[in-house]
Length: 369
Image 1: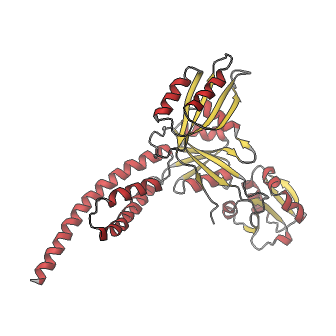
Image 2: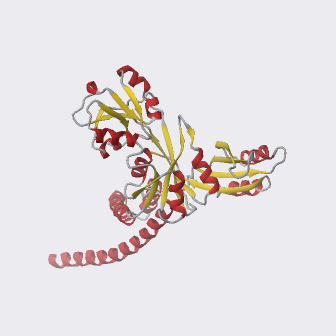
């Protein structure tokens, strides 16, 4: 009798496992579709908000209270498997950036899309056009620095190009003194880096009495130190850059300010229509009619519909001297009822109007070890 009970229980488990296997395949097919959507739009694999929503909803399906925490553990395991599958599917993603390996843009790509293949391009336009032509899936370009301000060339590409911004990421600028393995800070006589990096670390360099030499970027500086093999020579660069060129960190975080950050945008050919409930913002590119009060009218429309402009900038139009377009980063969701009403009303004030991107909450990426 006891053996029959055991046999029946094992048979129930076998049937349940068989059903779960079919459901697993069905779930993975949906995961494949999600991965394809994220790949097209440059969205991150992890969506913590969506995971919490799924867990809260699924807990309600378990009527036995003592089983709910066990089901949550089971579900988290399933989600981990789903994310692993998504990473496998997205390994072939090609992400364009401007600069050489080890440049700050390359570091941004590696932090945002660790599973993707970074593709080095000569400049911002080359990276942008590589995506437009379909040679790359996405590009990651800097749009703003907390010290230096906007990156005007990228803003111009937003206005003239066809791509959409699907995500915003901010990365702290952490500068380190890097040199040959075995070198010490006391040995260093000269420091090479990009002029901006040298400026950010000027107080440290003065205290140490180092000579300086300019390079086109921090990655080139690190590469030069590695190639020249001089133990009295150092570069200013990020931790990841030092690792790429086999250099050691001689002094950490030598830049004066801890508040220096660069914002990077992910550009995709596909528009991001499906956002989490907490849509953080959207980008508007527009021109206004050449009549008195047109710009003020457009700005008033945005405010009247309850939207806050985080940024409003003007840029000269390259093909029309003394004519300007406007770039606005606006908090909220243009797909809401108020957003749709705002856009309809703006059309009366604007000669040209385009939603150039929408994105969820900005992600703050820390330096990796």
